[in-house]
Length: 419
Image (cartoon, rainbow, N blue to C red; front, side):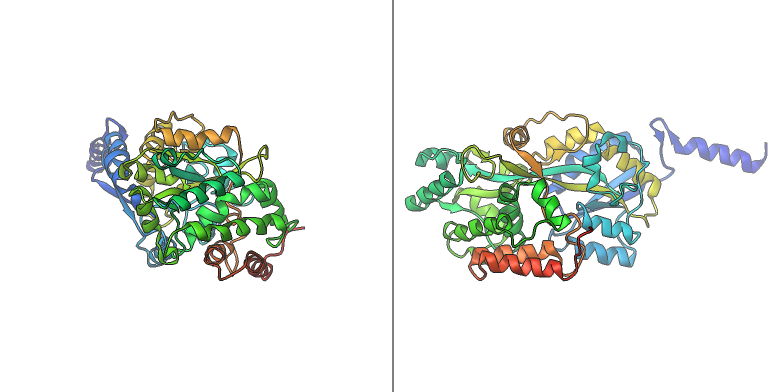
């Protein structure tokens, strides 16, 4: 036996551990994310669970601020300093990264068979031939409310617009609570928790979204303007100074018990559970009249991909296969109630508020945010412009009709529907 062969054999046995593939020295994987709120969960639950099964791979979760994430990630990728693992926004933002060569094709990654075509669609090319992120979770929109406040004021959970405004009027007249906690300073709140929350009940979810992409409907049509007319009414219920109120301000107003209703995404559940000292409930976006079909934004929200330039690609793929596993799905969905697993293996959730949100899937039709697929690929970017106009409508600086026209004109300037 030659010295070289003996050395190779010894090296081979030294790096192969009892758990299968291990590493001669620790490999450290860095995760890019916009979810700073999840830092403790990654550090205390998810990463330890992975590292226990994969000796030799260390993982660091390194989030950026949500509003800075896309720009910060782009700069890091350009500079070659981005992490090995990229937390993926759905549809166009991540597709753009894939087309630029920043995200690797992981279509054949072990574990991808655990997801339906619908779950994978948010992180695939338009033809479905390449997948570039492991689907992690969807989020559902609706309203979280202070049960103690509702009980105190004798308010029933509203199911129609009429009941919704009657509840807001009663809360406002009493004066103990701000009726709704939402600000317009950060812009995205107004669109994501406002327009995209209530809008599907007007444009009929996937039916309207698909028609918009095909060019069969326009943002100036009544079904798309109507949600803005509703948002314009919200101004009277958001409390003094809402124009200068940031997203964290809104969260604090609600969790401190100063506001009765919070237009929400289900991602708030974990944080609110730790901060609110009162009982909470949730209700889906009210319908226009009793008996109408209800629609919810059940948005494929978060995935994870491989930085194509990672120097630790094998270890990163090992991590991504774990993210695609039922084990990860169970830990993640219960550690982060309100992030609903996209894994085909059912996850039993323990949190009652999360159970309430996910129960709406049984009675309402699900859709995703209208701006996320295809319609935000050009300039002006429809998603970002929808942030601006939603805030303008609530602030009263644009009428619903003017906002809709600006958005449609911007879309028309670059988007030509396929015929």
